[in-house]
Length: 325
Image (tube, rainbow, N blue to C red):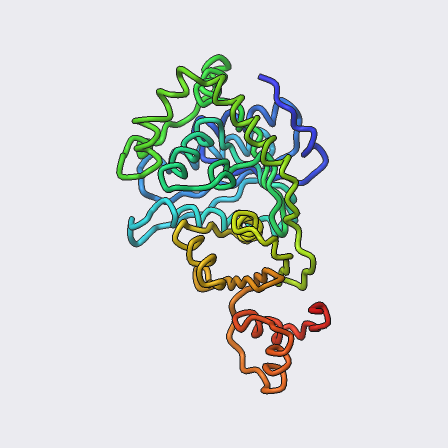
C-alpha cells in the first residue's frame, strides 16, 4: 500500500497514536515512506488493555527512534466520555505542538470514520459542510491536521497489518453501543461499506469537489490576534459555513441548536468561551472575556455599531476601530 506523503516530507510531524488498526497501519506506512514523525498517545485508564497499548507504543518508539509523548488520565466520570476524551486528547496534542514546534498533526481517520460521521450528521439534520466534516488537510490557527487515510477502508488497513505480520490492538469498547458512533458502525456503516465501498469513496470525492467549486470566501477581511471579522455574505448557509470554519480552527463544533440560535438571535456564546455576532455587514468572532470598559469607548462602539459581545475583547487588546467604515 503506497500513499502520497509529499505534503509533509519537510515538516515537523506528530502522529496521534492509539495502537489500534488505523494508527498502527499509519505508523508503518509513514515509516516505510521515510516521512519524519513522532508519536503521542493518551491512556484513559478505562481498560486493562490500555496499559499494554502504551507499552507497545513505547516499544515502537524505541525500536524506530521516535520521540513519544504519553498522557495518563483518570476520568472521574464516564458521562459524555467520547467528547471528554476528545477534548483531553486534542488539548494534549495542541500543548505538544506548541511546546515542540510541530507543524502537522497526523491522524488515522479512515473511510469508515468518514462515513460514520456522515451518517451521524445526517441523522441530526446537518448541511453539506457538516455532512462532509473531515478534510484531508485542515488548517488550524497554529498547525494543520493531515488525514491521509480518508479514502482507505478499515479492512484494507487491517489486511495490510496481517500481511506484514504487524501487531496491533482491538479496543473492546468499540463494540459498546452506548457510544453513538459504535451504534452507527454496527447497524449501518460497516455493512454498507462492505457492499458499496467504491461508490461511497467516489461520492465523497465528488461532494468535496462540488463544495470546493462553490468558491466561498471564508477568509477574514480583518484579523487582530484572536478577533476575526468576516464579510456578511447575505446568505444564512454561507454565513454558517464561514462561522463553522473559524470555530473548527479554534477547536469548537456548532450543534444544530446553536446554528439555529445564531441565525435567529444574530449573536451567541459557544461553550462560554467564544462570542459570535452577525451584523448587517459583518460577522465578528472573538474570545469571550470580561473587562470594565470606559463610557467613552462604549459610546464610540455604539456609533461604530460594534456588537456588544465583541467590545470587551477589542477594548482589552486595544484594537483600533478604524477598520469599521
